[in-house]
Image (tube, rainbow, N blue to C red; front, side, top):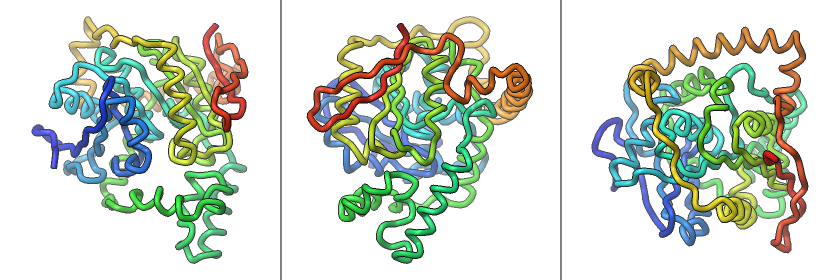
Length: 349
């Protein structure tokens, strides 16, 4: 089995041909969750998937971690397989890791694709009571209806309500990899703390990588407002909302999701990697990475203060609605695919 040589050892797989694309998975999940759709991507890309530390088959160091450390894990993997840079596709927590990777190591990232993710910190948009209530109801309904067997309660968090009802066999196939590798309670706590104490809002204008934000139009896990915040503050960003899909839109509507991504990449290609960081910030990177968690706590505290000031001025309301200063121009794009409905595209003019 392929593992990185230096620790923490990361399990990885590589398949397909084309430009390299690094897939970064979500909270407590192994890269096995990509297995059902990866053949579609392998027709177009040299696909690199891996398990984050504390998840799947990768090592679990006996200490807490941070998003900066997890982002630098990705650069270690690229080093070991001999790649200077790659497109990066991060989903949910993986999107936060990919975002930090692009900010911290811009010379390793070509195009950046962020799916159903968040900028992190107190200025991100939390799920509202309606979203939480709907999710809890659907999970409870599934538990009562089939004692958690068909469909599994996790389907309520990942898919639209209709998808498992219309596609029970496909739902079971998609969800099987989610339970294949169990995370320890300590691992879950480590990844959770890394997520909670991570904030990028103040650094988003520094982003060099052209960025595609993708979000399920009916995502019950991550508010769409977070993708709007990211699209409004990243200098070169575009937001595509995948219609009739939930948090795991790339599993629920795989062909359409790939079509949208390829359309963006084809319009933007070739996309070179960014410029390496220089000066004091570059020299201090190993130090800020080592102290990533306490620095994240400080940034979170700073975000609370700024968020309070923004709340008084009304700017926080703008941010959580995705109405950041100099917000992108919105337009409706018709997809060439026959089954594709109109999707909302946000792009800088």
